[in-house]
Image (cartoon, rainbow, N blue to C red; front, side, top):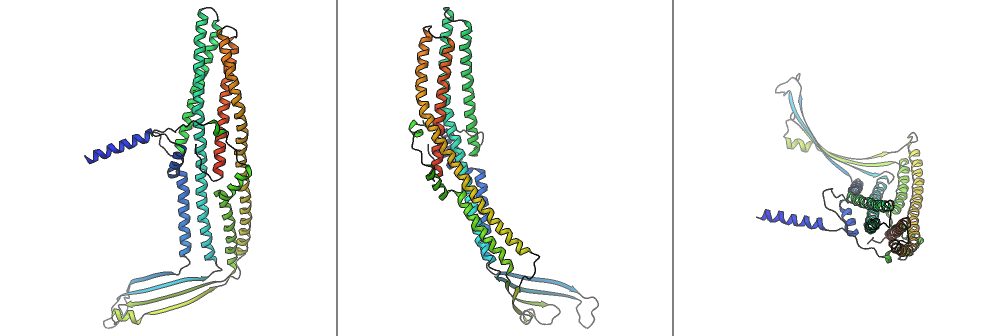
Length: 433
């Protein structure tokens, strides 16, 4: 009975999930938990954490316990009560500690900490990239959904024109050739509608793949009506967006950490010129069956302890250290160039979104006026066409102009909204529609 209730509850839960319409926030939150690319970046960060912990543990002395048990056989030994076979064992504990190696071990720990930070920033960069793609696809879906509505209205108008044309042919007020043009217009609108629906399905598929949702799972997004006010919102200045992005974007922080890491690499390379000091120590004992002493007595008698200091001084290394230092300096120069390139790419990306927002917002304002004008013109043409004052070509041109004006208005509207959201995102704010 309990099993049946559990299965029923799971089915109800799955059904609710299937009926849910995903908001932009839902999509982003789900992707942050399930996207495979992001999970891979997070695993890389965890691996870097393990390296950092290993480097920290390497600062401590190493301690090793050893034992060796062996059997011996001496066939030519002579004497009374001489045992040709023997058994012996050794036992020891050894310690080693690198006291000084030019601070290379400490700098290695610092560098691994920086590598861990870089892995974290790379994961954040991946997450940001995924969120941008989700926003782009989400807005495209909203645009296509509204474009489908416009295409449906256009198709309905074409059907009505075709019906009027058939009536006019029957009463002799229109030729069959003109009616064929109206039929062709209706067929074109049907094709445009099917094409728009196909594009919408494709964008939804891309979004599902980005969210790692399997093909058999039901999926649809919430389609809030984007208001004109959203497209006409104030556009932040390019300088303010770029300044905010420089402070918080992970790719910029990553490039800064890369320079710090290259500085440490230079110090580590220079450490190759310095001596290395190791401290060693150990205790051990041994036993043998050839001895007449008891095992415990042998362990005590054969016990010994050692301690030592080892110093290694590089004298001639076939230019290895000099090459390492020079290459580390070149790596730092590369890190500086990479930072400049990241800043340049960031500015270019933000400038592109800013220009898109500026241009398309102006287009949207113009398109609003144009749609109103084309709608009035088409309504007048329709009335005049029914009265026989306008021909079929003029009617079809008016309808085409109206559809094009509506599509232009939608495209500029949603492009502006997307650009504004992305500028907001680059300032460190969450995207929301």
